[in-house]
Amino acid sequence: MKKHLFLSLFFLLGVTFTQAQSIYYVMEASTGGGASWSDPGDLQAMITKSVTGDQIWVAAGTYQPVVPVYFELKEGVKVYGGFTGIETDISQRNWKENISILKGIGTGNLVVRNYINHLTSVTLLDGFTVTGADRPSGDGGGIYNNSSSPSYKNCIVTGNVGNYGAGVYNKASTSEFTNVTIMGNSGLKSGAGMYNDNSSPTLTNVIIKNNTAGEYGGGIRNHLSSSPTLVNVLITANQSVRGGGIYNSNGSNPILTNFTISGNTATHSTEGGGGIYNLDSSPIIKNGIIWGNLATGSVTVFNEATGSTTYSNCLIEAGVIGAGIVSNSDPLFVNVAEGNYALLGTSPAINAGNNEFVAGVLSDLAGNPRIAGNLVDLGAYEYNSNTSVVNLIVNDVKVSVYPNPVVEKLYIQAESSVQEISFYDVIGRKVKQINPVDNYVNVTDLKTGMYLVNIITAKGQARMKICKE
Image 1 (cartoon, rainbow, N blue to C red):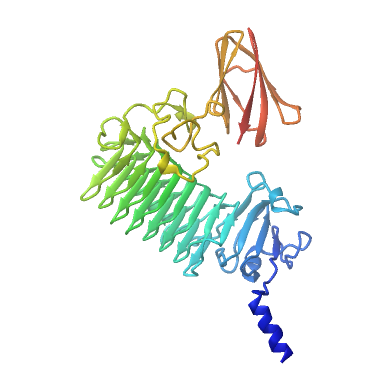
Image 2 (cartoon, helix red, strand yellow; image 1 turned 90 degrees about the vertical axis):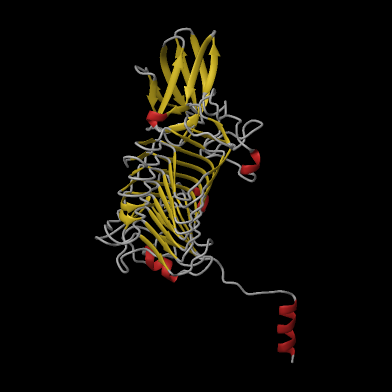
């Protein structure tokens, strides 16, 4: 009687028993139990033994599947890459510097395969480079989701070969992709970067570039009622016969907000659609820029059959006019040749957007505030006078430094000759000094972080802060 009363009180008080979260540790060529960094396990073995709520920490290195010949995620399990193998807290990892690689094995195999395992968004792959799929026939390459919708964050999907969806293939999927770069993938048919089949994934802060498809959709192909949502997305330097950037077909109606589609190529002789190609599809695009794409036919958007496009607060290349297009003028990107699609201070895209379209969106593709002035800018990047281009006046001599943040080349413009440039880290150590010959400094040797830059000119010196990404 007492036992039954005790159990009844337990349930009335809402007390439940839950399994404590486990962390499993993985390093290259390891087969241990995975209970610590000193006894690391095999990646797929640790995924298999994990349960919902568990985490897997993966050290830098290259990991290839054995049996099965692909990696498969598990519901509710979060897999993190980017560790050195000594961390005690997940905040200590650096996935950009400690590169964890998932690499395909053999011919015809996928790298990450989730096939009808019905994963949900609580399942996560975070901090990995996915590469090396060689799959000249069949669907998918780097990442394959079929009736499965895990989340992907801080990942690079590159160097994969496939038929459809060489980088990412989604079928009946609503996966979320956040801070992901999909680049340098080769699709023999369609959707070299991403192929969506009856799928509506969400892409936030995503770069899709340098992917090549043999037929449709160099960057993305949306097919059979696929209507993904894209926010803060850059689609550039992709190529295909039709739809260099995006190809939408068979009732696919994606929604694109604050995006930049530029530098893509469609090679069809009359109806290429360098930016977007719509076949019986009607995308909705807001606060966007479509500029500088190449095609023999339409360089911007090509609509076939019942295809159409709804524009709201967009800058579209000259020749396309209509409701919702606020400008046909050059958006004035910082440096197209270097792949920098941030805005210069005189861009017509600045303060030309609608704030309602970005409600709840806090940052742009570079991580800067999404709204820097009264109105949101068009495109993936927000202009900020404190971060995009630094302008200083030194003894009546103007000094301009851009882009900021910077990845590779930091450009310096001054009205008097620049004699010396020095970089100091956050604790004041001089980490780089150069006497520039050209109008830029290569900063690829600097680690990610903030730096104070001291520029000495013939008429004085200037100091400014930059962010190295």
